Image (cartoon, one colour):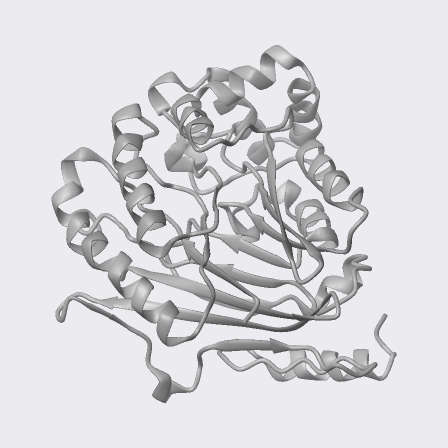
Length: 360
């Protein structure tokens, strides 16, 4: 395949539980390296979709940094991209303004408009960002400087395409009362979309945003979905500590005009705090992409799980659910084949109508 990406999320690293998580982390790099070689994939890019630390503290990012550096060296990774999660917020320095606005968005009509008004004020936006100070310092040490609207983009040339890794921040507003919810916001989405749309070369966009759509503030979900689907070809989430892979066949109904297959959404497993939540199974994803003539030929997603009893990583080929495959034919018509869970009869029917031009 032309492109390989390793997707990880929700490490929740902290000093008090490092002994437990080290048992998983110590074997992760070796398994990834062997699996990428066995699948005959190129040297990977790495995407970590949030909750790198447990409480957004400097000492926790020292652990994160050590792990990331070792992983990059082991895999000879071509790049690393990150997005912040709710656990990357340092609650002890969180501005009361952030909590107030999140609560208003959840509880009051018009809360989103009020938030965007405050976000437009430089001092207020910096106050929101301050709760993630150690996270942004971590990014700067990795050569990343975020734009004014809290996103950043890393671009690479692959098969004559501009392949963009777009990182959005859905955690700069946080309330412990509504700690499940995140918020990206229209200004951030517009700015990111404008940046990738202004490129002269054909592009393929992989967007990292910690909160999946169902965890976005309800009053902002539809606008966030529409904007994400408009420019994203792959969307990487974390937050829910569970693997999910789906194809958003409804994207064109929401105004998507980009060529190629509909967006693929991958929600990562995690390398989680084993001591505090032993029911969660650690895991990771590998995403492989082939391109033909500046268009997508195939996208494959492998989900790999950690067996706690055996202390080893695996994916069960006998279940015939992975890898998930999205395939585009080289002819004029779309030939999208999805192998994996969550394909419903309704989705297949909708896809059939699209092929016949009856569901624009």
